Length: 343
Image 1 (cartoon, rainbow, N blue to C red):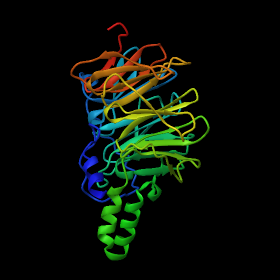
Image 2 (cartoon, rainbow, N blue to C red):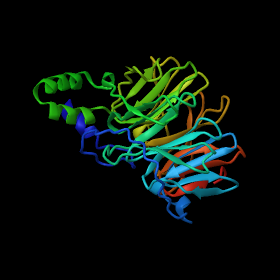
Image 3 (cartoon, helix red, strand yellow):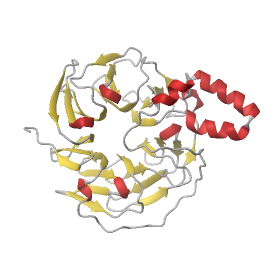
Image 4 (cartoon, rainbow, N blue to C red):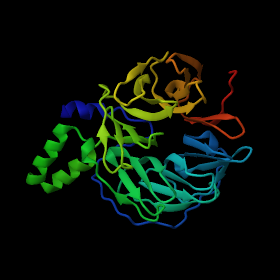
């Protein structure tokens, strides 16, 4: 089992890097700004996420690039060169961005300026998602079980270790190591948890988190404790969404599952077996739009029927969102692109 787990971890998302060191967390908040010149072609480089809330839209990507939308995408100055992986808007003005080197940035003016709340090259693990429950309380999650919580709007972040999300044999393995070799125990402990790729709030108040090794877990107490759900699938999930009364999880090689009760899951068949990275609700009972590797853009109806809408050659599409002006934009290996429905 341990060998098969290690094999499966070779299937990582395109922006994860190899990490070989134990978690050496510190809570030092660094505020110094390192503002590089605006790059005129940055919006054509790797962009890993884009989000919108009312009139505010943000996109993030490589080398610390952040873009805000004002009739067009405009790059803004940031205090980091770290690869940024995910953005979250709590309100049109208040938001957070996370990325490699355990980077967390905050904006209070809709993305115009950014404050670095956390960054540590010693941690050597990327954050892959961030979620706030209100303006003060939130969590950031990432590779190999990276999980940090704030209760003061991000002025300080505290690490948590969620052993309940380990496999039972790994829990036993760690217990044995703890009594035999503390140094090896700490090293193994820092790499055995799966990658936490996405965390969302459901309409019933539960948190849903998905990740590597088939991880689907829910929490009733804002992520303090987690319960795993067995979908009988060991591949990685990269995204999740709730629309209507149905929850969808999706990821590696086109595997998509849906459930109305989080206990019984059905497979959603797609026309292509491409890894699904991003998802957007089409509103009402119109279903979902999925985007993924090999440039696939797939619509899934509420009844489970799916249709390939576009396939953009030579690019991986990682995120999708609709702006307040009605435009739909995608992000990925070729930067930011307005989606042409008639292509």
